[in-house]
Length: 205
Image 1 (cartoon, rainbow, N blue to C red):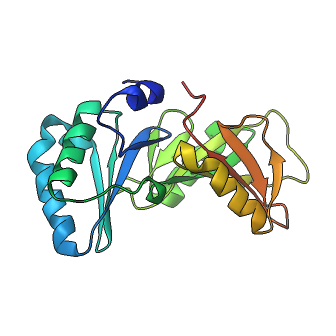
Image 2 (image 1 turned 135 degrees about the horizontal axis):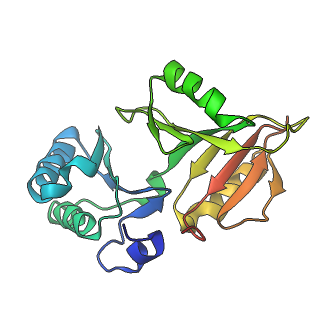
């Protein structure tokens, strides 16, 4: 698989944004019929990449995600959208994960897998088999942390919009907990200390 940096360096993928392991694009539409026309076009051009394509169809837009950073598939899908006169809106894509701090991940992950009815990817990540809900991951802790939330949200956004999202959260009453790892991620908290990370692909391998 190509890296996020390699993907974005390729030509013809300007509509797409890396969000953790996915790349996504959102195409604005004026009706369901326009969205269905886009889906039909995607079905014609994706070929062997069909199984990695995930689509969310709404009357005002279609969000397309690729489970791999497939430059060729992204280019073909964008070409279909261009032919139909549909513009991409990168600000409309994001990926939300729920992250749980755990001392013994192997002990708690089976519980969450059973409760959520999710599948497992690797040693510490769960996913919704029908792609309706957020991902669920574990963050390994060495010691318990008093006074800190054990669960938080991770919100992956287009890299060029991250600082704008952070600023909006701060203006809405949040506070900056840490920007030590920015632009990879910023840690923010609401007025009561509940935390969230705003993340991008920048700085990730």
